[in-house]
Image 1: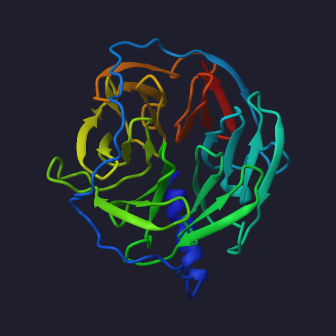
Image 2: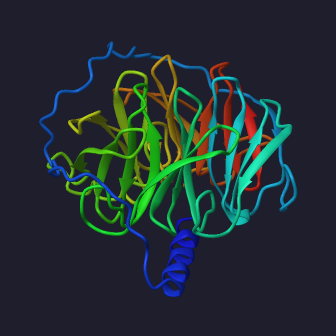
Length: 329
């Protein structure tokens, strides 16, 4: 999956002589942020969890309504239980109800407003507005949950608000937007309309290898999580970039992770779900890094290499597995 994105990006860059750069406010980059974190309650620390069970699957391969191309690059759920999938191959976002029934879609190939070149990730805020990260144009686009275009920001470069190889986007409970960038080796924080706030380095003294953030998520208590593709672990930060802990470590056993991709989510009970691409399963930890359980790697509906997952308010977990969405509960 990651190699496919790189190849696609190289082709896009070869065909494009310039990338439009959008306006961004100027503010100092903070490798060691000093801003005060938003006050939040302390997250619960569960000590046990029950592996989830497969319940259903939907979507088939193709380009028709309700079908998915070969490389979906993200999945999110809204407050009503609807599910959105970033169908990168077909240059669109598709919307389904909680049972997988097709509702609508938007997008199209191109670099204009509402179009996509390399749709790399999506996230959703508390108002059910969606944010789409485009690795081809290096910009974030914001939409309503029915696909109406709202705004965009980003551009190629090394200044505040620019991107180089953005891998993931997420929104916290206060509707601040975070973007992790593998080449810049940082996380940038924005308002919901793209105003730059601060940034922090993902290469810190706590781990000399922490350099390749491949995805990002926020929990309900103001913490940010970035899975590291190469080093097979997840890093937890405060919402201003203070390092908190490392979750998982390389391996195949309980509490260990294979090669990680973009998928990480935290539910309202403080359980962190990690899409373990290398071990073809979902690993569960608490938010302090304590191992809880694993599931999805056995039985007739066992997962393949998984990149993305999303949690619904009703407790369902949706996992993108190839061109299929599988539900667990």
